Image (cartoon, rainbow, N blue to C red; front, side, top):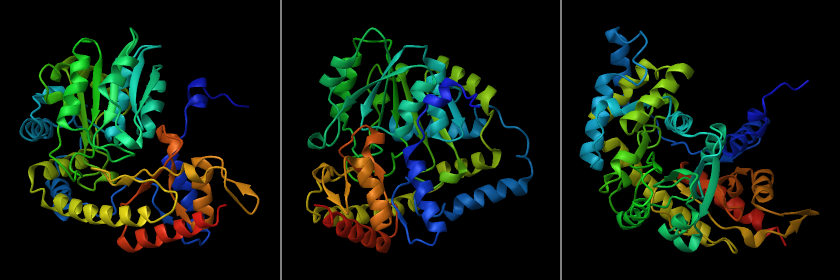
Length: 398
């Protein structure tokens, strides 16, 4: 008997988590698997942030339910951060602290969408965007950018996709899975299109803000006329290596922040009290540990780009941020080994896992079936070994 709702039957499983689970199964069987599938920093949470959490425990006053939208001093710190670092004017009551940026996005879609509303999703996109739109009974309209344009859709493509049912636009910069970063000029072109459509809300996912190797990060909400229609999503998982602490947040128009808080109040209530104190420490302390992480990521990026560029048939660009490569591997489609034919990126990802013992994620899950996503949030030795194994496995296909 299967009494599951149609909603859950139709919901796709997270491809990144599914591949990570398969890799763990093999590891439990004694296989030496190198995981490049999860977007998780391989650094520990900086010591001073850990100490901030310990101090909060020792104070003994953070054991009760926090306010649903987060402690006021944390929201004040986020408000100050938005103003100082992003030129975004969100008051503390326009900020909602959630259990990770994923819940922030879910809250927003559930608060915003009615059945049949369309959301333009810049593609390639993070796997959960489409699932969360569909959970809120919305419809995704994918607008794709290819490797020739650093995977970034254009303002002209956006304009062509807008209909009278368009309710929102969502994108990430720096982008998961491509690492692409929208420039100020590109964001201004997008904003110019949206000027004629005042009822379209923008969800700008900036969770990788600190992991940026080029020009300074720019937020679309800082463009004239955009702050009152932009939800800026951020959090502590990536830039502060705090994935397990589960602290994300939004800055949003007041009506939408209140709606998101209302939903959160019925689903989870507030984020963990001690995690919030750790987050406050992160925001109000020196960012130097984060900058040191980014230096290491930059070095790995250069190395991995060089190694991938040496593999015949792999087309790779140089990402501007985050810690992913998204190479085009379509030249291997149709090739085979030992009677097994590689039809697509999903087949290739499974082949790489089984033959090279390296876990990557099919690009199909991110909206581009020609690519695979590889995280370089791993040690230098692991990355060198993993790419050597992949190169050897791909060479077997003919």
